[in-house]
Amino acid sequence: MQYFDATGRRKNAVARVRITPGTGKRIINGILMKDYLQREVLEMVVEQPFDVSGLSDKLDLKVNVIGGGLSGQAGAIRHGVSRALVTYDESLKADLKKNGFLTRDPRMVERKKPGRPKARKKFQFSKR
Image 1 (cartoon, one colour):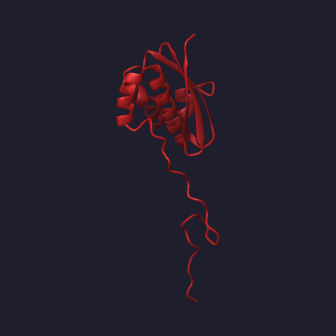
Image 2 (cartoon, helix red, strand yellow):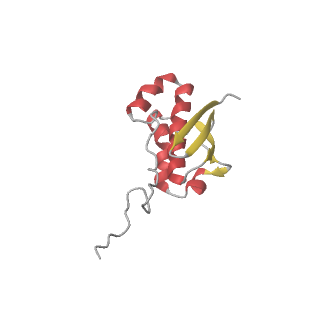
Image 3 (cartoon, helix red, strand yellow):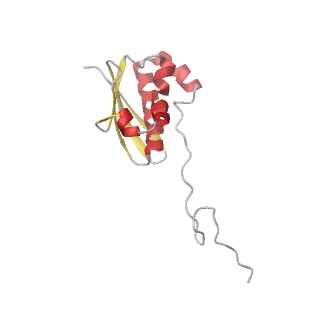
């Protein structure tokens, strides 16, 4: 059976994506996508590369994703799906790149600073 692999990353999430010709079945960590992601917005994020390419009902998706929260995982899956679609069909690269799906989102959580409760929040100031 022919398949196309790729890796996607977002925040602390890493997604290993495998695309195979099929009927449009989506499985994430052994669970159906709608049951795993729980929110329609996150499902739409994962489906965006398929919608741009027009291959949503022709390819099956199987994903192993670790790290981060659901939002970061959905972004990592989108990144991985986009990369896998490019290996599947090189002509899709221009459309996916134009929509920004092939670019790894570099935004990360800012580190906590010493003497503060969070990265930027300060303790309450008391004049007296």
